[in-house]
Image (cartoon, rainbow, N blue to C red):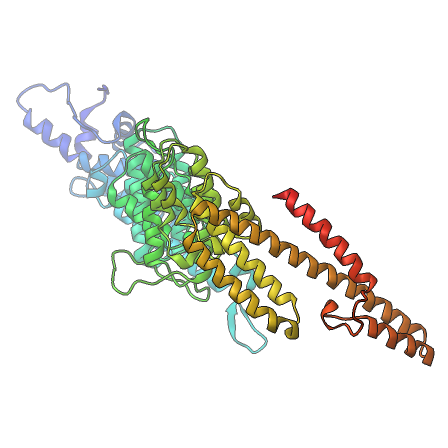
Length: 571
């Protein structure tokens, strides 16, 4: 409520509203006029009164919206006076404000407290259209300025311009961040209709979110900001960083945003999950105290979206994000699948120590990807081992469920050695590890022999494998475990012998090459023949001298006994 002591006659000459009020009280001596809900308040009314009195003042982008609204409220139109306040402010808005993007933003900011009247007077719409048109024109002009002629005379975008994602015509991004969310949404929709680049829209959304969501505001306001930004995200992929999408998802979870908002973010993240990091996936849970530390169900839905509607990962053209279309879904590329598999294994290892993480939820994440996603199971084995360590009260059946996830043939040598001695694994799993380790040792032995020596040996190994299999089926798990360890020890000894023999041969070969370089005489050739007679690549099996053994064989036998003692002490 405010009071002004002014003469009514200047106001009556220009204001239709005040003229009508005075006419209604013609028979009585009116000394006070009450104006309810005056737009712009006392400061704006004072400017209108100055205009009526002929006192000069400046119309600017900071007061033009208020003056337009108050001139409409007071009916200061051409009907009551020529060059009245309404026509003067309309002219300023159209000829000055709408030519400048910055001034349009200022007018929109001033209009926030003048709604819905500012909307009814078309102030908001005119400013929004002007902003969209100016942004589009700036972008086009910037694109033309970055064109250059190639040596063949063709126009193309300069390399420096291609590296600049935001472009030179996106200086307006920061200016729009001051707008209220409802007006900002209308500006973004207008820009989309005008054809502003999706990358520019994405950059503006990121800037707006950083400015608005870092403030200490009400939960309702932040929720409205998150849901609106998600609704404004362009359909094209890769126009905003995936870390920004995860940031929005964290806020959506914390603010309990709408289901449609969260599902939209999960689908978008799933379509480019191979670009995510472990920190991105670790979304805190904001539910009751007995729940898990991190959002498990949310991550599972993201993984399902990745498997079902991941893009083809092509780099030469942008993939369009599609949601809700279940017909002929794309499958992720193999490289993307490998990246996500490693990411999931790291995520499982991170959440495994959580005491509130029950087995079904752990299995839900571990089984979310297809079997071919993992070429190496070391990460999965590590995560399962951490879960077994943190949940020691698991039953044998639950441990077997976890162990079934691991393909022990896809463990590295280090992981396999660890698993073979891991007492947290079920005994059947340890037997499996030892059996596959045995197969690998046999394969190494077979490849170490030459082709001629391999032929008779292959029958021995083949019968060994068959007998071992029969033994595995007939014996108890404990006996099978002991038998496999014994066979593996023997295989390791045999492999060590072969490696030592190969080292001796390599040393002899080096000496022979050195002698050949020093002398080409007949004496050398005679010495060379004698050495060749002593040297047998296949050991003592083909020696022409019965009952005699070379020094190399004697040293080999001595070393092999030492190896046996070493392996026995290790076991």
